[in-house]
Image (cartoon, rainbow, N blue to C red; front, side, top):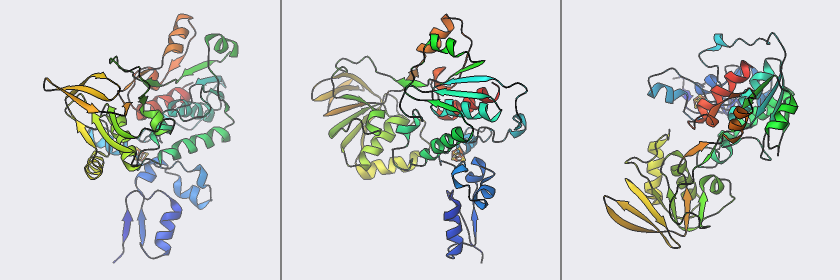
Length: 352
Ligand code: SF4
């Protein structure tokens, strides 16, 4: 009986070894093919670092099905609408400036360069990747790194000029003299107006995930959406301490694609949660919350903020005021998700 093995096998060499060792007769590679239909040819030619690997985010494919809409793909913005975006050069070569090297900005730069434009990418940090960098660290999310690795490789192949540690200003943008400016400065984490939040034991989730801050002991996470639950999973996985998530709504993990395994992991690891809970104040030793009109104290040696994002749109406003034309993509318009940011980035770059 022939055996076909499938589900999350994205690496051609892994697939080949499974066949060679007799584990399987065939390998089914579905999501890998959505992410990069040219995967078999690239693998046959040994161009492994040019494969656009599926990162197993489930946001565009399974997420699309669950919403009753078309399938999309985080790493392949043209999936299902290839005929709308033929791989042709633009009629006129332009000088394109992209500001912000998160996934949306990188997609914009790559798409514009593929159309034959001269592209420069400015990034204020000393690295590319934006919010995808902290997103790589929670359990089972390491493959997110492959998207940034792929886009970095494409930027190099396409001769995009990448300038790091570059804080863009209106004057510098004017002086640069681009034909097209694409703003992809993303979002930044909210800091809710809670009494006591100014204490130095309050830290942002992304600083925890990137190792800048390492909390221990009794840890309270404010916000039980995707970022809050993934940060809790990361801390539980590292055995960093006892984690309690405080969430305003009646549901933990809103926006999380792997909700069921995450909740099972929480049960196994003893991660606590409080739903329908409002944070009143943060003090030296505890967080005070109200649940069902009853006040409670949760012991806290560290407090992590995962209370959503707001657009990082200061530059955008200054450009509007100075009447400098631009196109804005992703979270700088409205903080939604990386899938929308990459699709908008691609379309802005393609249509530059
Ligand atoms: S949306 Fe995510 S999981 Fe689905 S095929 Fe694309 S990269 Fe893979």
